[in-house]
Amino acid sequence: MTVIIPVELVDDFLARLHYVSESLRDFELLPEERNSVRFNLLPGHEHFSPVIAARIAEVARKMCETYRPTVAKVLVSRTGPGKYELDPHPFLEAQGDLFKFGQGRFGLGPRLVELMGFFDRQLVPVIGRFSAEPHQFPSLIGAEVLERCKYLRSFPHALTLVSHLREDLEAVQNFARSARWDNGELVCAPSDLSAIECLLSPAVCFHCFAWLQNSQQPESRAFTALGKCFRYESGNLDGLERLWDFTMRELIFVGSQEYVLAQRQRAIDEIVPLLDEWGLSYEIRSATDPFFIEEYASATFQLAFDLKFEIRAVLPYKQKTLAVGSFNFHQDYFGRSLNITTNPGEAAFTGCVGFGLERLVLAFLAQHGLDRRNWPGVVAREIA
Amino acid sequence: MAQDIDFDIGGRVRETLARVFQLSAAEAGDLRMGLHPLWNSMGHMQLIVELEKEFGLRFPTYEIAELLSTEAIIKAVERYRQK
Image 1 (cartoon, rainbow over the protein chains, first blue to last red):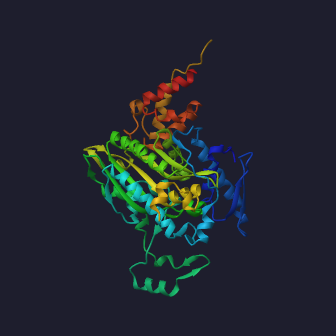
Image 2: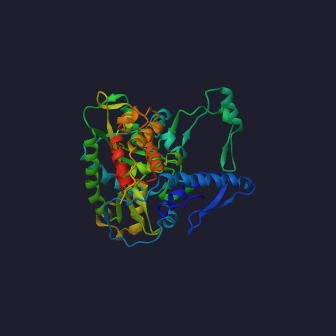
Image 3: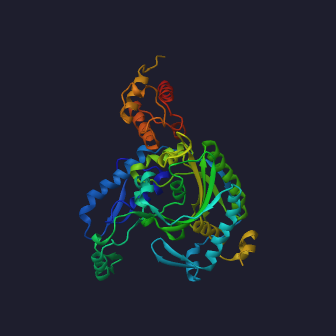
């Protein structure tokens, strides 16, 4: 490679290499030099080596082009009382509280469902202080909404496309006759499948903005919804840390710039006591979204304009942190993209606060363990 | 000590803006972010990269949020060139 990957970019860089080629079996960045990637290809794919090397170099170059050293802004830093250090996944699986259906797809048993419900029940009254209107949205989202919001361009690697069979008797009959599960995939004739009208939604707030599209909102408003979100993350999918299919509680703001920024700050102030009650070790710090490599510059833009702060909870068993929530300011991006105005000709500003419930559960168990006698009182009392 | 001052910074900034946002140099004379459809978040970062190449400098992250108009960019570049 013609560039050296800065230490702060290493995880991000490696995460993106999963999308370079289906021929890649594994890869590593040489830890000292950080300017070379050693990779292995699937048997029979060796002739792709030069192309893949060039693609890896392109990813590195594009990421480094707009990267600049940045000191993360840490708004809050807490060390909770948790002393647990083991990975809870194997214990949860052994006790029947967690079941892996496939890559990024897990079923949760009673104990985890109870904890998820608890965290959401605790979040809802706090969200209620914002006079947020409760909503429910579908898991499916129209492709036109994601296109108008440029999500298709910014996060193409994370999309989950939805199809069904064409309304055509011959196609349905052909599918029924020939579709079969083979070598890890459903084999069928692509010509039997419909065009793509919908995707599985990658976030809750898009529905809210789609609902308000082409409208004028003279009064600032807040919304809340609990929803399923879907982000395909290839080889980065990893237990409850990174699911393809996860549950998010969102609080969404629409209005003037002053309103949205003030509510985002207020949300941080109101959520911190809750996180402290749960006894979590965490930081709230500036962050970026995992943009596709062509749009990687947007990550620097997010940092420069303080658009995103994440709650990063400690995972002691990994000696790393995991984002369990975020506080986002979208400027007037969705207002302009979907023609939501506050006054004629003035695009609305928007923001959202999101909590990944499975991740909250994981962070809690990773810090406090599975024995509820070691849990903070407020949690232990609520969970029978 | 003599300083190497580039007296045409304004012209070069306007030319860079014009190139990135497909405008004439005259149209780039008094631009602000958000007033041109291409000067959005991606356009802004593209502009920053082109300015850095043009003047051989590197803006720190915090300053990127301040380079929101032709005038602000010219002042910032002048400041760097005089350092």
